[in-house]
Length: 319
Image 1 (cartoon, rainbow, N blue to C red):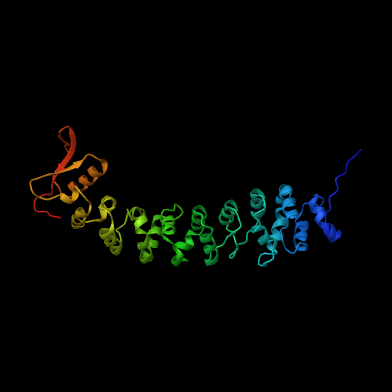
Image 2 (image 1 turned 90 degrees about the horizontal axis):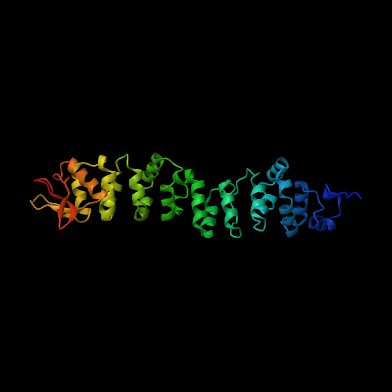
């Protein structure tokens, strides 16, 4: 006996009342004309039969790229389009979802992602299907997932550094932008200088990032003054090291009292101040010595078996 497999090439030739069975039992030919027809006859919904049919025939359907692109292109702006319905369909297998929608070149600006899983949302973002505007950004915020939020920022970072949606960004968003590898240091510097008022709101969590961004350039005066007056001693020491080539001696002298002990105890009297042996202390002391601010400290001293540096300010200097 020869078994012949018969598929219905065009379900429009079959009574609509039978369409549910054609898809339930996988009798319809897996092509996008049939899928679209069944979708439209189902009140423009991706019904369960259609979901199962797509998942079962995904390899065949995803290989029909030109027909799929034509199907998606012809419904791009319609609220009842099959593409938008597919985008919103969380029941589709993640793999099927990606293979189908990878064929789309459309950008959607008002998508409800609240019912989608994380993998699907990340896919929409990375493939530029989830466009850049206030409505979509608010959807990202409402989704309340750090990876999703960071992915959206990275995807649209050039628009963000141009100032779009700047008033809607929070501290963590600025941190993501400033630490991104997707934009150059120069772009980050321009972004900071253009949006100084907003940037200062994130200095409590991003000050080191900003200091590093300006490691090859003089800090803007208002930003330097903000740092000088608000950073903790540890970050003041870091600022001194990174901005060494951009600071004059008077700048350095004014920062020393803010570096915390033992630096803040330095004076020009004969009593030398002790410093623990550490890479940071040595680097800062070398910087101060090279500028002629402190006397030589290079030979570690020992007191009761503990090694340390000793130094003082050069005569005539004060902090």
